[in-house]
Length: 95
Image (cartoon, rainbow, N blue to C red; front, side, top):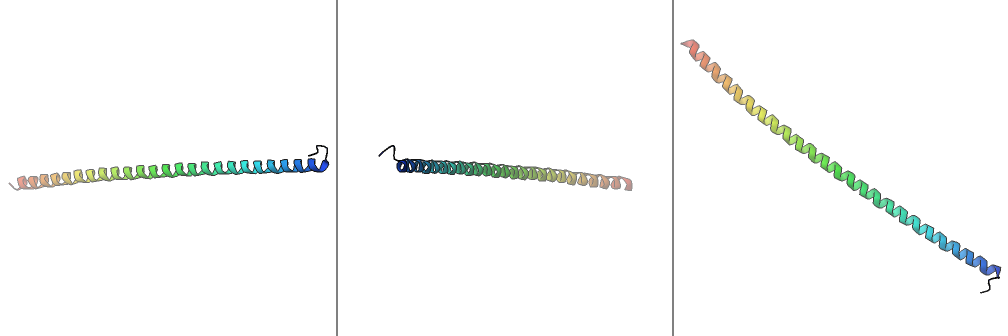
């Protein structure tokens, strides 16, 4: 190894540039991989939020159905009461 040999210096520089290119390529791959990981996590969060939203909608739907059922029951009761009152009223009118 002669430090004054120009061919040897070019080989060393070429080898160092090759190592640098490999390191930069590796770092680029690492950055891209981290990007994919972050994207996947983001998609997972979005799916989780969507599932929670669908669950909330279903719960609200069930609550609304329960309210409608309760209202229907009350209306049925009131209709029966009105019918009974009409029958009583008709009965008293006949006397």
